[in-house]
Structures are given as C-alpha cells and as structure tokens.
Length: 226
Image 1 (cartoon, rainbow, N blue to C red):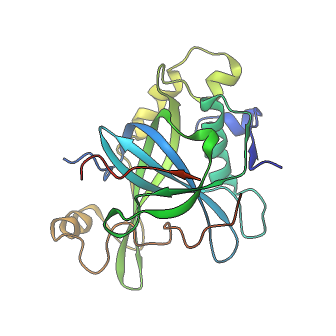
Image 2: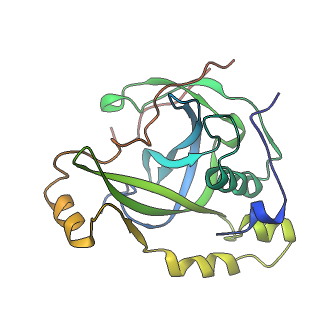
C-alpha cells in the first residue's frame, strides 16, 4: 500500500516585505512537512509546512491530488508528480501522524504528513488568485511549478536527462502573473490589502484543510520567530 507512485510519462513531467509568501513569484523553500487533508466530499489535498528565509509557514497551495471519487485530479496530481520527480522519490508511503505549530497562534495541531517528502529544498512558483465568496474577497496561493533547488531543473528535464534551467527560464515570463476572478481587478485588491483585508482574511477560503484522514508520530517545533 502506498500513497503515491511517481510517473515518468512525458505528459506528467512537462512543465506547464516579510518572509511570509504573499505575492506571485518563485521562492526557495524547504518543505519541512507535506500535510495531507481530506475534504468533506472525500478529495485529498497536499499542503506544505515550509520555511522561506527563516520564516516557517503553512502554504495552502491547492495541490488537490484526488477528486471526490478517488480519481486523480488532473492539475494537482500532475504538479505533485513533478515534485516527486524533483525529489528523486519513486513511491510515497502513506501519511503518518505528526504535530505541527499551525493552529491558532501557532498552537500544536495533529495532522498527517508524508515523511518521504520532508526536509526537501526546492524552488516553488506561486501565483496569487483572488475571487469572491459570500461577498468576501478570498486570497489563494496557487502552486504552479516546482524546480530542483541546486540547478533549477524541471521534472521534464530530469526524466529526459536534458540540460537543466531552460524550463525555469521559460517559466519566468509568468512569474508576476495574478489571477483575478468575479470582477475583481488589481486596483481593488491593492486597496483591500491596504485596508488590512476587511470582510475576510487570507487563507480563510476553501484551500484550508477540513479534516484529516486516519493513518498509522512526529513532533515539529514552533516557528523560530516566536
């Protein structure tokens, strides 16, 4: 029994102020623990407890790896597979229980993590997305791509044994992209952020974990900036 198996198929490896990640860009991060969550409908997602320039944080990046019926989610599963290739991992074991400081005021919270992908340094491209739900602005960090930290290689370049870095350079043209939905625009979002995000806060949307599955413990310390 395993949580995931890496695929080397071409279609699956092709690349498509504070130290908190709050803007579109490419970020060098250490993935301390990938966190598995299960929605009310039964779909599985992987979020990242990560460190960026000394700042530990949870990145709800919408890596939805399965749909409600258990089938692979076309977009999320592909990006997650690219992470496996970059990590050099062929099979990811089922999650194990751990405690992370991701609760209210960084209280310790029991979650399920993928140990095979812990303590992994990568480059991660994030694209911010803004939408409206129940009259409130929602802010999401969408994980668009991963690259190997030491040489910026994509999964495609690793599998095909190509020169590393070309895919990263192509991706840079999209690095500042932001997605605006539901009639929102750049000026509206700038004002909303300036007003300290009234009527809804970042991370309160549907990308937050809803419940954890039960699996077969590891305890992580609180953020170093406490």
